Length: 380
Image 1 (cartoon, rainbow, N blue to C red):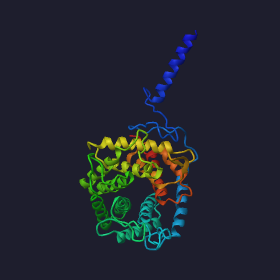
Image 2: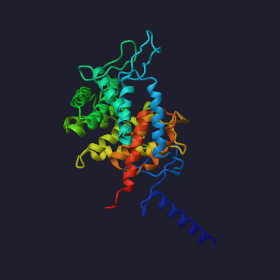
Image 3: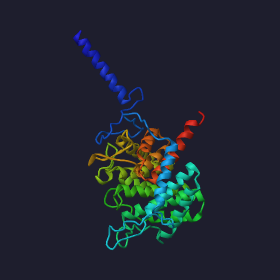
Image 4: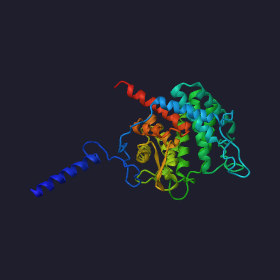
């Protein structure tokens, strides 16, 4: 009798393991919040280990965006730029608006306009785009106003040039202004001047900062979608390949810097955008898709029930609320890839209150609209 009970217990235990592992019932292992070690799936979205409750409605997001917009108006310079940059952090002080502050607002305001039809948001987006046109250098890049004279060239130029490039493409889609497309092309042409390779590894760029490279992939991918320029698609993939080999089984990246949640979000956004525009028969599509699933599942493992996202392994008790980079990555995955991440959307929405992130909240509003339309669509 004793042996029989043990045998029965063993059978039940194995059966439970089989269900949890997803064998036979097409289920999957749930993610553990704050797990930085366990491998994640590279072929599907893994379920969260908890149910999402208490998330805001679309109307609440609209209200939060209005509040953030009013706060933003207090630092609006009246010329399509916001703020004074780094200011007194340097000697002599540098009171020059940062390009990324304008470009992110353009992206957020356009999403908010699409979600609400509010003309003020459309106007601010237009003004921001006009400012970016004036700030773009003849070679296509933008100055990073860090230090008395600012910075140009190098890996950081990918960062500061890619955001306005993406904003120009989004602006072109809305306003159909050819100048915005020309500016985006000029920015992407500059991005493509970054040297391709170094050393013996065939896909390692001179710049090896993963999030800088995926800024580039993001900008080139959205441009390719509009222009059909195959060179932009090729370069976007090459930037992505240059960092995929550094991805760990847990879905995060091997260097401490890019393990921080906002940098992880930048990388995921670039991968997801690239995957969304790649042709289905592209021979390299599976590489990008596998890396995207892994990066997404890792991000989901950092989402907490209160809407926060865990900073990273160096400070696992620190929680970040409302960061726009991972938030935008999740919205792109929802809208462009149609992967089942509604729970992650709702968690991100829980975390934006009081964050001041125009880009993140705007993208959430648009994603909420997209998800709602999907739910109401008749079954085929």
